[in-house]
Image 1 (cartoon, rainbow, N blue to C red):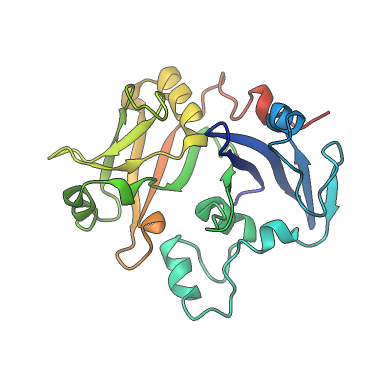
Image 2: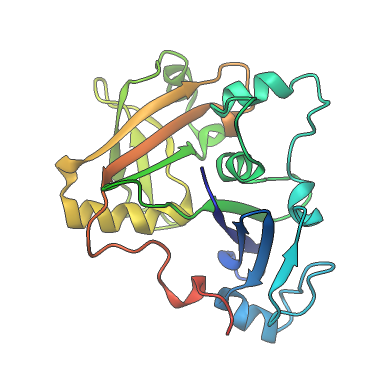
Length: 245
């Protein structure tokens, strides 16, 4: 179960994604705070606080999920809701709003926001599920390969150091034959790269959880990254991800 999420915003003026907030659930209370990632964009006027969350220094509390995030959940009355939960690998009788938002990112076509889970240590393990990104931009034969993957299949990570958009990008590929089936989400990449460096490339594992043939491309391939939680690792520790004091 996920209890805290990073809210990212796409600054299209400067063509970069920035961490702008943290959404947390403590018991039956929701908390939202802005993060240092908004600093420069707020000062130069490219970022404006959200409706009803207009003070960047305030801690916001609510007994129900804030409308900004509530509107990113699929309504339970929708006829495709059960299929949707199967796509994101959630039990309809035992899941939280946070679990849904962590997996889907709460993406809407009408804005430039996305949510990412803050992984929690489970025993000595680091595990995070995510959907492969960028599938719609792949060559047709790579998209076709996804159709033939099965739950439990091993996947491999590949550094894409000449990627013009992000030289830290991690591509996801199959083993034999090697074919790219997407990319790791941007805001999880730093953590993955750190753990690869700390634990060694042979001690990290990526596998298929679900292949959803009838789902939109952003929900087509659900993966899981797992490795040991190294004692020197802390997720999202950079200044930009910390809440504004």
